[in-house]
Image: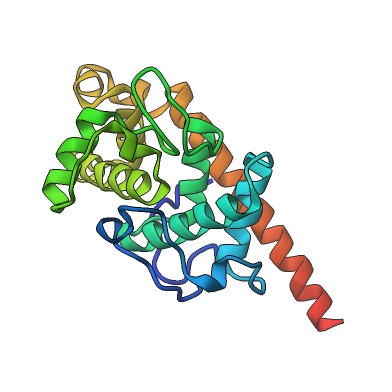
Length: 211
């Protein structure tokens, strides 16, 4: 299947206009619009909520809505398909905002050193690694970094590989090997599964509407 990480407004998910807060405005908490505190009608955020719920059902419902709202907003801000961002979060942390890996923290596992640089470039306050447990801050800085890697390598698969292995290692690795690394295949496979699941769900909903 082709790789659709970046899509125009007509994406795999029908977009819903919501108020997206800049990460600098959510320093005390990852605030989301009041409309997201209760299940809205079927729309992009609802699709993402279901995906996050499948990924980590143990999270409190309020947190799952918050993460869905953050992914919706930040994917639009950075030009990614939100289902790709969910796939990235699944592979990186199984959608845990407090996950701590060997080199990263939070939903999409951003390292403190990378986050500090990205925050500086974005003009955002940096108060230490604990900030990466905040979904809005984490996803904003992680996608900013991924976007830079895409510009640098001019290949989305190489960018995904560099996000995991680091750009210096990818520069030393044969391109075909990096593009087909297990991590890259895992992220893309989950993304394609989410797209297929959403498409099937949408077809079923359309069939019910037509009946």
